[in-house]
Each structure stands twice: as structure tokens, then as C-alpha cells.
Image 1 (cartoon, rainbow, N blue to C red):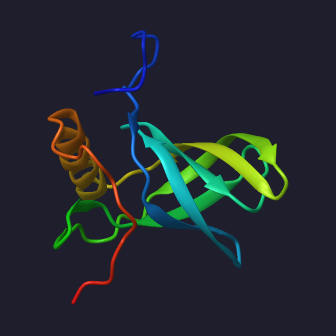
Image 2: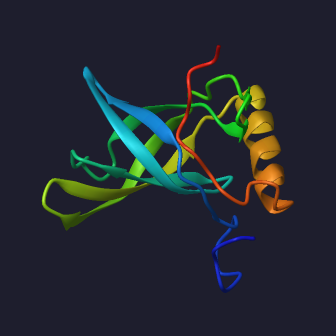
Length: 128
């Protein structure tokens, strides 16, 4: 179920926690997603990012313990960055220039969340 209580957003957000990586130039930062929508995602980070910064995101979506998506590698723009504790930031991004394949893969994942099959999320595990 979407986490938005009102239909004030262009795209419903879905709470999901997965490991991801954000690149800002030469800096690679491991992050943990908080929510995702067709328009962007929010994540927790130990490093702040400047509003307006263009970043790369790499994340694999977990469908089940043995089923993973190919990594999505969308580009995004930082919309906001809020300090929520010592060395802890919550950052919101908007996807930019998604390819057709990236959009299709994201839509499949969001459909999976919408249908309620992802009642619990888990950290990414290595494919064996």
C-alpha cells in the first residue's frame, strides 16, 4: 500500500528498504532506501549531498530470497537533504532521464509493491 495518506503527489510512494549505492563524482556512498516512487526515491546516508546535485544510483530490487532484478542505475537530482542525527542524512531525489528499460523495470517493481507481495523487505544478498 502506498505510504501517502492523500493523493497530493504525482506518484504514490512505497516504503521499501534496500541497500543501494550513490555516486557523486568520484565519491561512492552506500545508502539505504526509505521509499520509492515512479518519480524518485528517498534514502538514508552518512554523507550530505547538495541540493541540485546530479547523482547516479545503483540498486537491485529484491523480489524474493532467490529472485533479484538486474541492477537499476538511474540518474537523479537531489531535491532535499535533511540532517536527522549525527552523521545521518535523509535525502530525497527525483529521477532524471530514465531509459525505457529502466522505467519498465521500475514499473514492474512498483507493481510488485502495489500488489502487496513485498510484505517485508530485506537487505540485498549476493547471487549464488
